[in-house]
Length: 305
Image 1 (cartoon, one colour):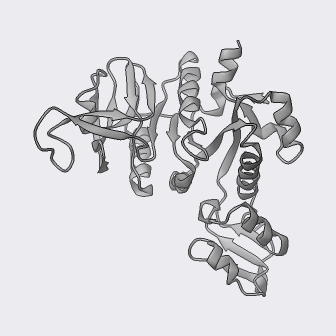
Image 2 (spheres, one colour):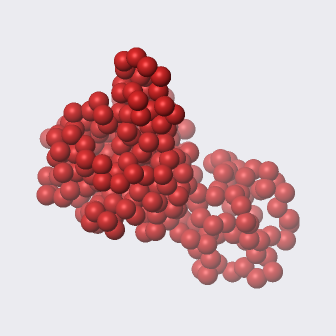
């Protein structure tokens, strides 16, 4: 498997997705940020939503946005260096040791209070949090890049929120996967589906004509079942609008062409292994996934060194 390098992230927005909470997204984000810092880069980061829990510290009723309490949050944490910009939430930030400077308020709030773009003045750990909606996430990234001259942005996003990738022009995504022997078949099936979606042809590269059916909304199992026989090519906005499982997608692609109006750049799979050797994993993958799309997780490379 290949190794990621700072050039895979520098000067662009990269979403780190994965099939669930235990796929290694946060470990990959921390390792990638550390790699960029070693090269003298100053990356920014945020998350899609919040994967954790929070409870109030102290007494008194909290306002709806959490502004009257401090919060103790349990969730993914990211190391932050002084001067780095990230998205945080008001109630948690007051209790952090980062000396955060609020650069801009952001739309939306959540379990940790109102969201804001902040800059750390001390090193420490930040709770990973961010907007839930496409519009709010695009707003945060735009402010980072246009108003605070941030060129490199990393976004932690669960797979069921991969729709946010389409909200940022020019963004690409990586898929973090944790592989063990027991879950190997399911993980490989998920990887093959992700690869198939990322390789869907763009409109203009396929023949449509009288057999082209353009969908205004998502391609769901119910929509797929009701497709008319004449529709030999089905068009959706992008891969995030396909809500078919691996088997359903395979069945559709046997008889029809599935195309997209806009392609999203896929950077590859970043693999963390648990109880399975690299050689056995590569043998199991075979030729179903190109080698140039397989990366070892930077944290494993670092540990091996």
